[in-house]
Length: 327
Image (cartoon, rainbow, N blue to C red):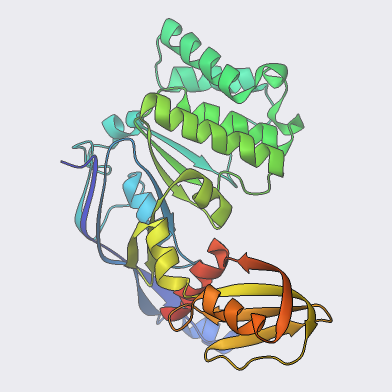
């Protein structure tokens, strides 16, 4: 049986509707209109133990609602969730001991006290044994390089330092599953690399199952090959990153650098995007052309000095997916 099993999950919210204006505001005090929003619409997926999965979608797609149900904050209207055979909502007290949560824009550390004091408070909350706590803390301090600012109040830390401390705090009780919501938001390149390296290391070393939600596609490329895409409350795609690249990466950009060009050859489904004195940028439809065929046609009319094949970024591919589903 899979470590996380989500089956036919549904969640609907009632949202108050009111026209603008003082009179309409007064009327709404006595007669209220509501609109039902289907935040999560009959979704199902399984996640294996030790797997890293990216759960992505545009704002309002249903990501946060799903994560809140997976963490036991919200109760589903219908459907089932089992995480390590526990129901997140009904078995909440027992369940929360097995999960860690990191929100990029929310802190679980106390703002005005040193980081180490926040760790000690979490130790008491989770009722951790002294030896177990010290061993885990030392390991996390070393892996995340926290030693130099453990005694520094949280408000005096840089964003990168605080995020590393947040991740450490979420792992002090050795959870089996870690929810990461925008873990690298606002971080510089060096801090992002450090956080990603640690996430991969803790996953490999302790087999922590990780669910990642992020709008930073470089996070997803660096950490996982499986993505689940949600939109309008429905699962739109569940598969490998390579699979989605193949599905939505049907075009490539080809830059041809030449010494002299007599004329631009007309090739079906090849668009000239930009032309300069000694180079041309082409958009090539890979379903009806091959790169070698395009180069062969250009070699007939010019002396080619160099060629560059430019892959579409994962951001471009995800945008294409969103457009296909009108998200």
